[in-house]
Image (cartoon, helix red, strand yellow):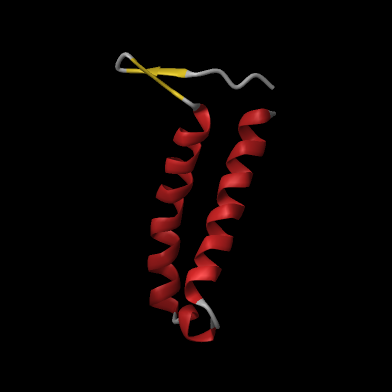
Length: 67
């Protein structure tokens, strides 16, 4: 488990920032699917729900990369 900086066009970037962007990109289609299925009508606090889903996606990515 070695997280080192990534050279991105001459700029060193922390790996967690790239993982955060990947989790956000995963969240975009999930939001559209949830809107199409009407899931958001069943959710009490939409912002809290999406934050929890984002954290689940981010932690999954971190666990996969750390393996």
